Structure formats: C-alpha cells, structure tokens
Amino acid sequence: MEIIITIIVVIGFLFSSLVNFGSNFNVKKQVASVVQPKIIKEQIVEEKKQESDLISTTVPVLISKPPQVINLIETYITAGPEQNQIINDTNKVIFEFKEKILSEQITERIYFETKVLGFDNDWKKTYSKKRTVTLPIGSYVFLVRARTKNIIDYSPAQTIFKINTSPYFDKLKISRTRIESFSKPSLITLSANIKDNETINITNWSIEGEKGKIIIPQGVEKYYHYYNSYTNQDIFIKKGDRIYLSGGYNPLGRNRNFRLNKCMGYLTSSFDFPIPISKKCPKPTSQDVSHLEPCCQKFILRLRTCEIPDYSEDVDVRNDKGCIEYLNKNLNNQACFINHWQDEDFLSNSWHIYLNGKNVVANDCYDTLYLKDQNGLIVSTYSYGQPVCR
Figure 1 (cartoon, rainbow, N blue to C red):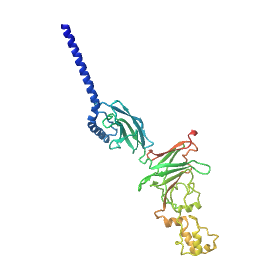
Figure 2 (cartoon, rainbow, N blue to C red; figure 1 turned 180 degrees about the vertical axis):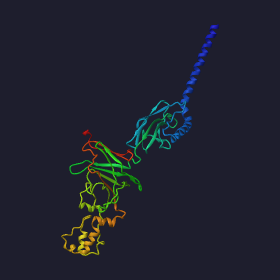
Figure 3 (spheres, one colour; figure 1 turned 135 degrees about the vertical axis):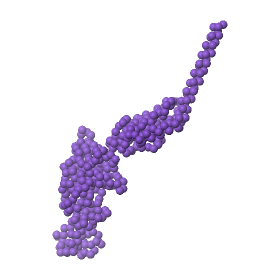
C-alpha cells in the first residue's frame, strides 16, 4: 500500500511540473510580443540622453540597446562608409541597408528609420533601403533601424565616419580640361557655384595630378594695358565666374593674370592670346556720332566690334581732324578703359591665368585632377582620358 501511495505522489508531482512549464513557456511568448511596445517611450528618452552627449564630445556616442529587450527584427548596413572611415574626396554619402526578421509573428509592413547624429534633428522615415545625404565637414554616426508600427529594432545598425573635404567643396569645380596639342597648350576650366554676394579667395589653391602640381597665383582685377605699376592681388571669385588656366605663355608678360573686361578685345589686334578673348567692346551708336561729318559717321558705323580704326586709305577721314580726334578718344583700348572702367558691366565673369609652360594635364592618358584649397583639402575632383593608357 505504501508503494502505491508513493507512485501516486510522484505522478502528481510530475503533472504539476509540466503544467508550470507550459505556463512559463506561454508567458515568455507573450513577453516577446509585448515587451517592445511597452518600452518604446523609455528607449526614446535614453536615445535623447545619449545623443545629447554628442554635442559635448569630439568622439560620437553610439546608441546602445536597453537591457532585457528581446529583438524580433534586426538591421544591417550593406553599403556605405567603413567604420571610422575618413572621406576626403566627396561630401555626398550613400548608405544601403536591409532587415532580418527573427519572428514569424511580424506580419505588418516593415519600414526604416535613419538618423545622422551631428546632422539630423530626428529620425527620417523611409520605405527605401537607401539614403543619400550631403554633409559639411565633421564627424558623424549613421544609424538605421528597421521597424513596424509596434515592433522596432532597438540595436540600430551604426557606423562612425568623418567628412574631411574642404568647406568650399563643390563651390568651385573642375568642369573641363583640354590636353596639349601641337597648336594649342593645355587648358583647365574651373566653374564657380557660389551664392550671391559670396566671394572666395583662390590664390594659393592647387591643382594636382600625375604630372605634377600647379599653384593658382595672384592677378589683376581691372587690367589696364598702359599702366605698368600694377601690384598683383589675390584672386577673388564670385557667383558665375569661370577661371581658365592655360599651360601657355601670357603674351602680355609674366604675372599678368587678369579678369577679362569689355575693353580687352582691342588688344587682340596686337597680341595672340592662348585663351581666346571675346570681343565685347562698347560700339558707338548713330546718336553717339551724329555730330560728326557724314563720311566720318559712315566710317565709324561700319567698323567691327573692337576693331582699331585704320583710315590710312580713307582720304575723307584722314583730312577730318574732328573725326580723327573722336577715333583716338574712343576706339582703342586706352580710350575705352578711361571712358568705361567705372561701368557696372565693365568686368566679365572670366579670369585668365597663364602657367607659362607648366602643365598638369596628361596627354591621352587616364588621370584624376584634384583641386585643393590653401589647407590642402579637396574642393573638386575631375577624371579624364583613357584608362587603357596605364
């Protein structure tokens, strides 16, 4: 009888243990499905605290997962900067990411939230698996987390990186190159993309390639050919400017780099410029010359823009002192400068810089040119040529 009683007690104990095990198992499943929604508010508070630390530290602070959280979804960064990468050649960063579902209970639509600590004020919602962001110079942490309405990845994928480009990045671009040929020297064209009323000093900036390095020199803002006491000054560019750097020699002399003005077209009759000069000299109108003799008027109005008058074979003009006086006071580079140097449209948006034999543009070979500011930080890159040459 004692044996039978003992057996009954053991069976009852085993049955009670199984019941308790099943009950605990169900509780764990319920916790897994409800624990995340309950702690969303607490996690947001924790994130705000950790993100605020970024303001007072030079090293970015990573967001950590709260304790005792069961993740039902995970996030991975599949493309973008490597951990602790320093990016020198672009300020545009592209991230790609994906999710991994750890529970069959997730049936809601999945989306992502991204955040760049040090740049974004809040999370950015997206259904895309890619984010492109343009950043100023600085250190950043990129965070991305997959989520649904009620489920969230509390261990966001994250990577630290640094943008180390120039503060002038892409404000001045290498827009075109021309290789040296038998008849023409090399030519590099820079284009300014800056705001109204903004100026940038580009003197002592450099352009570097496989063939070497050139330094952007000083120049003359308002060039007057008949004034020989120029003091070169730093070159300041403004919105819409183009800077032409020729490997050729300046026909005006060394260190005579200049901003083009509307009177310089007259100099093309005396000098052969490797960088073409547009002819936009002020041209007299019929009203301007109405006080002159008819033959003089006809002669002047038939002149081409920026043409220096040659009246040696025109007897009527040659014998008309009033006509000759008008020609000398108006239709040449010297007279044009004196009469128009204060005009609002006197200066053009083109700088002409001569490197006097220096050349960084490789002939027919693949190369990348780097435009760098005075501190050696990259402003623009430009690749050209045929890679088969290597």
